[in-house]
Image 1 (cartoon, rainbow, N blue to C red):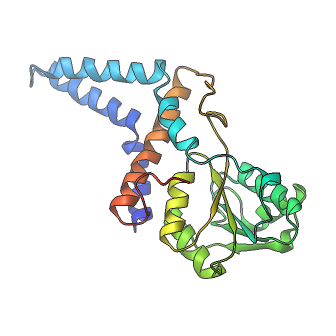
Image 2 (cartoon, rainbow, N blue to C red):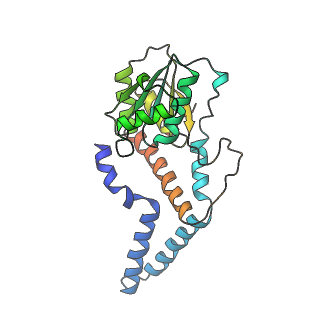
Image 3 (spheres, rainbow, N blue to C red):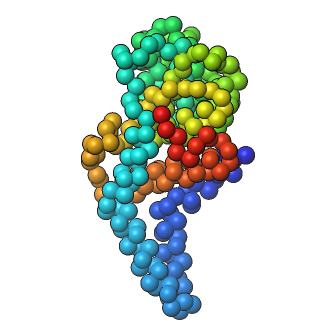
Length: 244
C-alpha cells in the first residue's frame, strides 16, 4: 500500500519541486497583495533553491548514507552461502552479482524485484550472461516492488538457516535502509554496496557540479532520508539509521 500511494506523489514531493511550488504560490499572493510577508517568503525560498543548486548540500547529505557501511573486500572474507541483488538500478548491481558469482561458484544467487520498467526478466538474464554470469544459477524473486517487500519475499523464498552468510547488493545510499529492513524481517545479511556517488571513503571530497545535477542529487538524498524515517515510523526497519 505504501508503494502504491507514494509513487504518484514523488515528483511533487521532491524538495526542489516543493520549493518551486512554494515560490510560485508566495509570488502570486504577493502580486495580489494578499499577504505582506509573501514577497519575503518567496525571496527566502528562492535563495534556498539557489543555495541547493550552488553548494554541495546534496553531497553532505549523501556522505553519511553512502559511508555507513564499508566496502566489502572479497579476499578478506570467507565465501558467502548466497548473494542477493536488489532490483532498481540494474546495471551496477547486476554487474556486481555477475562478478561475485564468478568469485563464489558455490553461492546461491537471488535477484529480488526484477524491475520490469528497466529490464524484462528474460532480458535481465541475457544481460547477466553477457556479463559472464550463469543465468541458470539465479533465483528470481519477482513479486517485490519496495525494499520492505524485497526483504519479506526474499526471506520467504530462501528461508535461510541461522548459520548462513548472505551478501546484499544494492546502492551505497540505499544500503542503510535495506540492511535495517532485512534485519527486521529476520534475515541477517552483510552489506555489499555499489553505485556510490561520493566515493568509497568519507574523507574523499567528491567533485561538485552546480546547477541541475546538484538539485537532482538533493532530491535523491532527501528521498532516501525521508524513506528511512518513514520506514522507522511504520516499523519496517530495526533502527532509524542502521549501522554495521
